[in-house]
Image (spheres, rainbow, N blue to C red):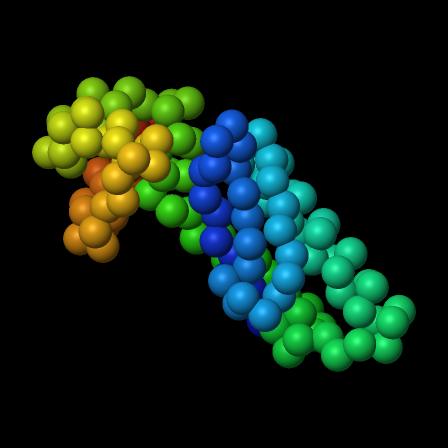
Length: 134
C-alpha cells in the first residue's frame, strides 16, 4: 500500500490541502481540518477516475491502494490548536511568546525548521499531559 503525503496549510479563512508530489494536480479546501482531509481524499479519487476514463497515465503513487499521510504546516497546526488550547498555554510550554506564535499563525512570519519542531513538540507535550489525566 502506497503512502501519499499531503501538505495541509491554513490560508485566509480555511484549510487547504495539496499532494506533496507536485506532479499531482489536485487541490482541496475546507473550513475544518476534518473537512479538508475528506475533500482532498475525495478529489484525489475523482482525479484517478478521470485519468482512467481518459486512458491517461495514473501516477505510481495513486496506482492501486494508497493511504494519506497528512503533513500540517506550523500555521495549520496553530490554527487547529486554537480550538483546544490557548496560545498562552502553548507559549508557556514552548518558550515562544504569544505574539510570535500569532505572527506564525497569521502568516506574517515563517518559522525556521528548529522553531517548527519546538512548536510541534510543545503541542505534543500538552497532548501527552492531557492524556495522562484520563
